[in-house]
Length: 142
Image (cartoon, rainbow, N blue to C red):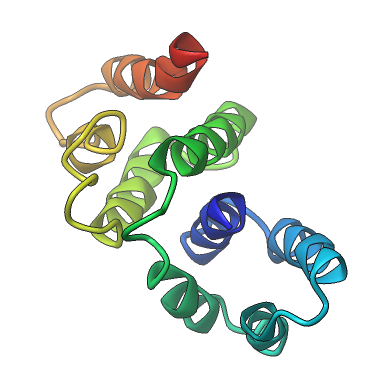
């Protein structure tokens, strides 16, 4: 569920696609067709905010923050490398995503980088360096 939650957050904040989220959800649902929660998620795939609201409830006890973070930052790096938005826009979206993270791990690295790395006094190259350090966090933990 951690990967699904990450993909949903990415979709909700403009870093990922509905298709990526739905593909993961469909895979999980096919493995567990009797799961009422997955069925509920299948029924709200047209609304990223509604899906995220349901998944956010899982981001407490028993939630594997490392698995979630690894997927989130892997996908964020891919999006950043695509160059589809400016660093300023990437930072704005990243801050909005950070605001939705649960209190408890939002102040831990690499998540906290999403809060401050978009500060207006940083030039793009500095921002990119800070984000790269966040992207590399889970690569170094393997």
